[in-house]
Image (cartoon, rainbow, N blue to C red; front, side, top):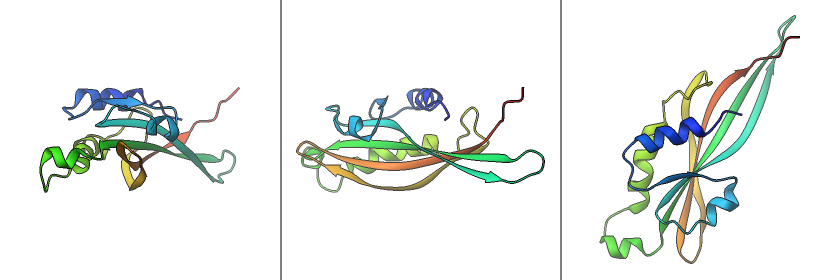
Length: 140
């Protein structure tokens, strides 16, 4: 799996309306009390194989989940017509989409987003980002 440290460094260098953190999994991301906030969560790695003689190639698609949290009552304080979720997601996604992290061979792409959960204090939205690289086999 690709390291998320360069992703975090890129987002920390950008001017964002909320801090960005790493989370171990989706459950940990949803337990945060920092609202508004953005968390990077490692997703799944999918491997596809290309049969090539004598050496097969393995393409790894790595997914990273971007969890955005906004307060449920935030729109009342911010005024009508203001979309706090969109204002938080847009600069983060703009910083990452089409960026090439170290070790990747294809730029980051957006694979969709969905409401993750809605609890008593916050709304959590998950965007799935993906990038690809070729697994390099170890030679003896």
